Image (cartoon, rainbow, N blue to C red):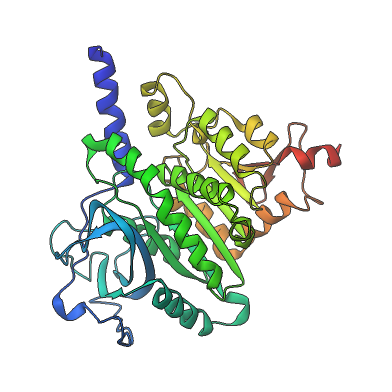
Amino acid sequence: MTVSRLSALFLVMLMLAGCGGRAVLGLEPENVIKSSAAVPAPLVNDKTGPKAIIPVFVATSRERSGDLSLPYTSKRSPSLNFARVDIGIPPNHKNGEVEKSNSKPNPARHFAATTFQPLDNGQIFIDRINAELARRPAEKREIFIFVHGYNNNFADSVFRQAQIAYDYALPAVAVHYSWPSAAALGLYVYDRDSATYGREGLAELLQLLTKAKASRVLLVGHSMGSFVVMEALTKLAETGHHDVLRRLSGVMLAAPDIDVDVFQSQVADIGKLPRPFVVLVSRADRALNVSGRITGGHARVGDGSSIPMLQKLGILVLDASSLDGGSHGVFASSPTLMAMSRSGQLSRRILQGDETPTGQAILADGTSAITGAASLVIYLPARLLGALR
C-alpha cells in the first residue's frame, strides 16, 4: 500500500469515527434490577436531570461483562442477550447531539442509564415489550428497531437510539439491536466481520418480534448497520421466513455503507422487499466517499451515485445531499427531518411516495421535492414512474 493510500485509510477512519465514541452508561449497583422485578417509575427533574427517560429494549450479540459502565463487550456471543436499559436525557440536551462522558456521566449534562435490567430469555423480552405496548393507545402500538453503525460501543449505540426516539418524538417502543462492534478506529475489518456475524442475531430478533402485539414494526439501520439489516433479511428469505419479512411495516437504510454490487445481490436474494423500503443517501457524505476510494473505487449505496439503480429495484430514495450539511449522521442530527417527523409530514410523504403519489409535483426524472423542505428530494421507485407518465 502506498503512503497516499495509508493516509487515505487514516482519513476515512477519522471520518467514520463520527459514528461512535467512548461513552459509558454510568450505572451503579443500585441501578441493576432483577429480571423478575418491576421497573420503578421514572424520576425526572428539569434542572438536575434527567428531564426525560427513554426505555430501550435491547437484544445483543455482544458478550455480557461484569463491568456496569459497559455491561456488554465487543466480543461475539454465540447466543442473544436481552435487557431493558432506561436512558436519561439531560436538561442541556441539544437536538441531534448525544451529550456523553467517558467517565461517570452527570445526569444534568450527559446521557446516562437510570436502570439496567438483564432479561433471562427471549420470551421475557417479548412479554415486557408487549406490556409496554399495552400501555399505549391502539394507534401508537408501534416498534422502532435501530441497528447502529461502525465504531460503537454498547453505550454509544443505545444512547443514539434514545436520542433519535426523543428528538423525533417517536410514538413507538424502542428496540435496539447491538452487534459486536469493537468501537476502535483501527478495527474496521473486525467490525465488518462482526457485522456479518451479527446477521444471525438480528434475524433471530425479527423472528421473536413476530410475537409482539404491535400494529407496526419499523426497522432502521445506519451505515455498517445497514449491512447487518440486509444480511439478516437475506438470511430470513433464504430460510423461508417470509412471514417475518411481511411483518415489517417499513425498512430504512440511512447512509448505508454497502458495496453497490453486494447490495444488488442481497436484494435479489431477498426477493420481495418490505414496503416502504427507503434509502437515505447523500453526495456530501465524506465518510462514504472516502470509504469507496479505500475499497478500490467501489461505490457505496449511501453515497448518492446509484439513485437510478435503487429506483429500478423498487426503492424510494431520500436525497439529503443539501439537507443540513448532508453529513454521515444527518439522519440523526437534521433539525429539518426532526421538525417534519414531529409534524407527521415525513411519514406521510414517504408513504405517499411509495404508494400513492397523487398530488405531488413529479418531475421528469422521477423526483419530488417535499413541501417546506425543498433541500430534501424524494426519488420515486421505478414501478410508480410508468403510471405517472
